Image (cartoon, rainbow, N blue to C red; front, side, top):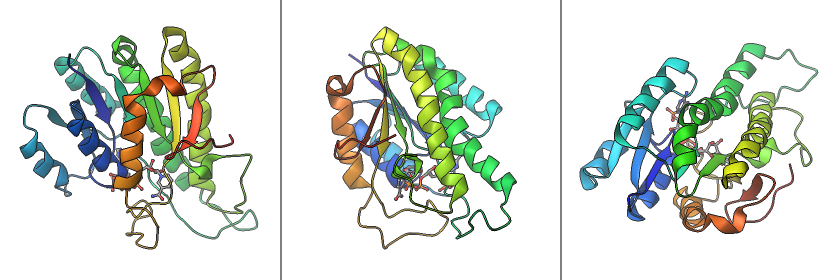
Length: 240
Ligand SMILES: NC(=O)c1ccc[n+]([C@@H]2O[C@H](COP(=O)([O-])OP(=O)(O)OC[C@H]3O[C@@H](n4cnc5c(N)ncnc54)[C@H](OP(=O)(O)O)[C@@H]3O)[C@@H](O)[C@H]2O)c1
């Protein structure tokens, strides 16, 4: 039985590690490329020439998502799992409500982080419904939790992840009707380029959460329910 997965923002960081883990688990993986200068996916593809497709996808663009979904649909008639991983950190500054805020920047981050995941889900939803697992894994963040919010700034990123959580809840209400599940994940604080420069001070390398997330995909039944599941990479529940 063929198993199909799609991971967006897969050039590096968590997305790349998810692609690696899913390939090892026997999936045929559509790996979303955004950063054409970063070549890790090409190296990986040479090890998995029959089960990996690199797909150009800018989740902020309707045209790009449409072209990518057409390509995926030319190769697969179902997807077991869609991992919406793409994101940008936006300006990680100390601006509070007392300061002058850059609303264009906030809209840009929301467009990538929240609408991007929903754009891709919208374009591929028929394949997910046809899949054996019917699983959407949206990579969210503790920063999107309204109930535990302690920050006075980082408006763009935090708001984008809160919006992603709501968009996921709405999608889940359709997906659960056909036996599927939306999982919202806080992957932990990872070393990555999310905020533009490499964050070496973070405690986790992305392969650590990726391993746990691939395990969740192996056995998603335990996460299925009425509501989207919002958990960290170790399976601990997060408060919306
Ligand atoms: N790192 C953390 O501590 C942390 C904590 C909580 C949640 N997360 C979440 O974990 C996920 C993975 O982040 P990461 O830490 O692995 O950072 P990352 O390496 O920056 O991964 C994000 C990926 O998305 C890509 N991307 C940016 N804009 C895009 C667009 N318009 N279309 C498609 N792809 C786009 C990035 O490309 P470029 O590199 O070219 O921008 C990058 O490959 C994100 O959803 C992030 O919000 C991370």
